[in-house]
Length: 499
Ligand code: NAD
Image 1 (cartoon, protein in one colour):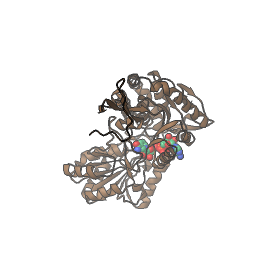
Image 2 (cartoon, rainbow, N blue to C red):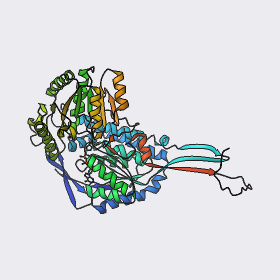
Image 3 (cartoon, rainbow, N blue to C red):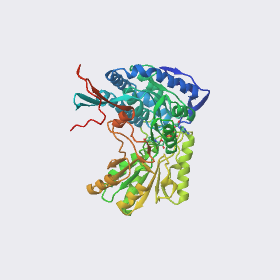
Image 4 (cartoon, protein in one colour):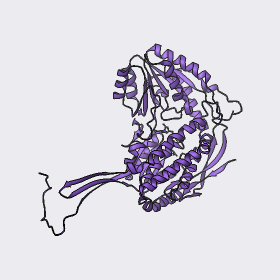
């Protein structure tokens, strides 16, 4: 059964736009919904609704806004099963991973519920005789978020809870490939007490995004997605005078040192490479093994672990990995595996022949493992975003670090070692935004901020955490004096000096 997936404008499910796009269940290949693709008029209505809601919401005491977030967190926890079912039905990831994603999203809501603390400004008494000065964080107005398919619940929750907790209103444009969980979650926010119009959801594609990027009522845009689109969003949004943060793609390297605990490193790499079918911006698609003995041991360990993996529908609790998100993405990832073979890398484990009985029309690709991957190969250089792990052989830590630093992306990286000096050198010098030591996916917790370097992020401020408060507010500094009645001073023509 295929159902329509509309927009949420001014607190109501609303139809808009004449175009639709099918949403698939990737485990079966069947169409589950038809998402409406907003036209300019529909986005205009969402922005107008957010604009109208702004004055009252901006003046709502932060404590009341924070209480909506606390209540929203309770509702998210109560409805976790329904949300995870929606994520898995449209994205394909296993249910346990959907729950992990939702939990990380909930932590951002929890952090937004501390907004009264976070919005406290700075105050200085007597900056001059009888003069006080303070800085406060003021809301921007209408803000917007454009999000990717791979974390359909979590990435929207990186953005709008903190934006609205800071007093802004918001228009969210989720991925058109798996839009249902974001819409469901937005309705829970209404139930939690968020006034209509404070959060609006428009489904759609480039047509909708371009309105958000150019409409002067939108003051700031947060984006998470692939690098070419991030670059476009950043350039277009900035050109139209907006504050923009645009997080892009990744190609994260894990360095394994000769002294590492290989068993632990292999277990960590399995989840980091194949969890969520490799469709994570913090996934590890490349291992840089220092020394041939290290590489041989890592490959032997990974090969043995891959043989134990179960691939199948995300709704089956025994499965470790589900399908890729769409047929088109499946073909793209399989094409990279073909390409790797043509480029001369050694395909140690070939997942292309996998069949999942009863799910022949699903987009399943088995885990793939390459050895002898070399810089210059497309499978080294480009983001594959699938269950394809490549091993690169180097002889020294410096060689490994030079490779990482030369790569266009700088989202995440990690090192497996028992040597504190090597780890400290690595974390100190590596040109990457998020770094793990014996931690394969160093995703910052909600009270730190998330962001890569180089072509993994365009903009100045990272996502969520303390940077989100800075991104979604503008600083105003007020200097105030109340001269005593009757005291009159003459005009002063030079800057006052404190001498
Ligand atoms: P995508 O770039 O295709 O789409 C992201 C969003 O942009 C979607 O909402 C989509 O509708 C919109 N969009 C797509 N094409 C557009 C265009 N031409 N003009 C305007 N808007 C457009 O990304 P995706 O495939 O949904 O997600 C996967 C990508 O996201 C990967 O590259 C992954 O690394 C990246 N990602 C990055 C992070 C991070 O934090 N750096 C987190 C998650 C995902």
